[in-house]
Amino acid sequence: MSMNQTPMSERVHIGFFGRRNAGKSSVMNAVTGQDLAVVSEVRGTTTDPVYKSMELLPLGPVVMMDTPGIDDEGELGSLRVKKSYQVLNKTDAAVLVVDGTEGASPEDAALIDRIRKKNIPYVVAVNKSDLASGDAEGKVCQTLGLEGEKVISVSASSGEGIHELKEKIAQIAMAEETEKRIVGDMISPSDFIVLVVPIDKAAPKGRLILPQQQTIRDILDSGAVSIVVKETELKETLEHLGKKPKMVITDSQAFAKVARDTPEDILLTSFSILFARYKGNLRQAVEGVTALETLEDGDTILISEGCTHHRQCDDIGTVKLPRWIRKYTGKEIRIETTSGTEFPDDLEKYKLIVHCGGCMLNEREMKYRLSCARDQGVPMTNYGILIAYVKGILKRSVQVFPEIAELLG
Ligand SMILES: Nc1nc2c(ncn2[C@@H]2O[C@H](COP(=O)(O)OP(=O)(O)O)[C@@H](O)[C@H]2O)c(=O)[nH]1
Ligand SMILES: [Mg+2]
Image (cartoon, rainbow, N blue to C red; front, side, top):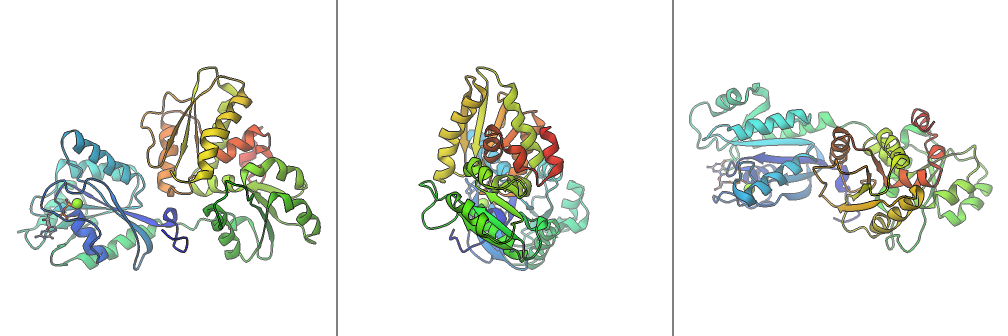
């Protein structure tokens, strides 16, 4: 994806689910008006989830996600079913496709159940209306115990009902959209905000990373002024600015120097802290990091990052964090790492999970991971908050959120 497009994590994720041959791929193609996914009469053709970023009017930027059938069998089949359920973890709006000639099955009912538990808005598309006889839609409503407004009769072949389905998807997905800000809710027009962005060898060539870009955009949306400097220019900039900045926002890795160079009467925080609030749960991450105090020799920590290709994260997750954790605790800590879409189901063996900021994961996926940890009673924090904590500056950096600062005593 080019840098000029809406980032993946900010797009509404629309997932198509259902049994094999229900017409998931066909319905997704019909809704988008494009041949994105392979359609076949051979059951189990879609073996991996298919993702496609596009503009879907009237909704705007979306990711369309086609999935393998939820009734697939055998060893490989059950792996595919698992993949479909993983897609559900990042789905903002779900379309359950049912073959109208066959009606709804127990797998469909189980899926609806799961979708409801996760509070994901959904619509059921009863497909193949060109073939179905009688009241296929009514029967599906009855089997699944749904009201009529959740169910739409469609035909991917003839196009019947596809327009209505598209409108319905937009309607349920938009109802979910909430106005969230990275910093915009804390600043006023014409405020000065100083952003500290180290340009070291880990910085990507010729550009800024996504959280930095998004923060600048949010400041622009507020009518405030962003001043972007490296940590080496911060002190002089603050001295010569002529107006006290409202806030300094720094990359976590430069935190120690930036904290020294920023006078106490200026609010100081980090991109990680702002994004923990924006994405998931700042409170859980701040509570989670205090687990460092109780670690023992032989305890295991999971370090997990959402992307597979980001060199900067890589280096932090595999080299720097383990070093800092061992140094801070003085214990023999075992470290395991995961990256990308993999996130272990069983977290109980970990004493702490340290996750990246999740700039490549959408909010739902991040929340899902946080809730897995919470459900299993495992403390979870993130890179930036852990760095600030071990360097003794977390308290100062959450001063912008007094109810969070309180947690640190
Ligand atoms: N008659 C008819 N056939 C359809 C319709 N939608 C899909 N099919 C056929 O059903 C089969 C399975 O479709 P596909 O989209 O691959 O199903 P998936 O496994 O759920 O992704 C293919 O042979 C399609 O041509 C429809 O609305 N009407
Ligand atoms: Mg398919």
